[in-house]
Length: 127
Image (cartoon, rainbow, N blue to C red; front, side, top):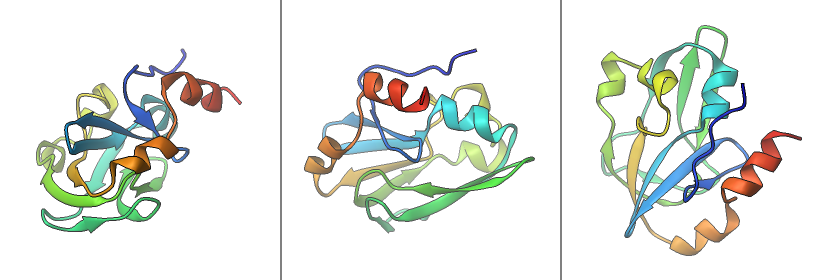
């Protein structure tokens, strides 16, 4: 089954996505990434008010198969973490696009231009 890619999101080569709402970005992992990981058992998230930098690690997702670092697609300040994932990390497997990991106030929206749109990301995943 092909992975679900959603139009209107921005994607990184490390399989994170950003859903943009104004100056805020919701960051999570793509359907492709959760498929590759398998059953997610733990999500390591930063704290509110932490700074994240594009291209830098901000946490990790652990599955029964592997642990994978989370790489921030954009820079900013964490304004919210998805606390539901503390008790139910498997929500990421059920719908990775509804179950974002962190919400950041982006410090530089120009960074979005370095990310892929849905079409480019689909082509990237199919390589």
